[in-house]
Length: 94
Image (cartoon, helix red, strand yellow):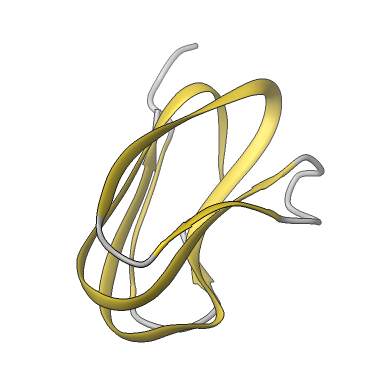
């Protein structure tokens, strides 16, 4: 793999996500800031037509995931109805 795969966004509203980023192997997820709600990480096997929940958090976190397949896209953010207030800084990187 060459280069860095990175999607980061400060999120302050419902139904808002990072840009999609293609991941394979180990990757990082960082959620920080002062916010209230539930941030959900999702993945897609069909280039973003359909998204599937992978995990969700209601507080800051620094974690890593593993994607064994090539061609899988990831996003993270607030699904509709999951944002209450504040700013969540969401970062997916590899």
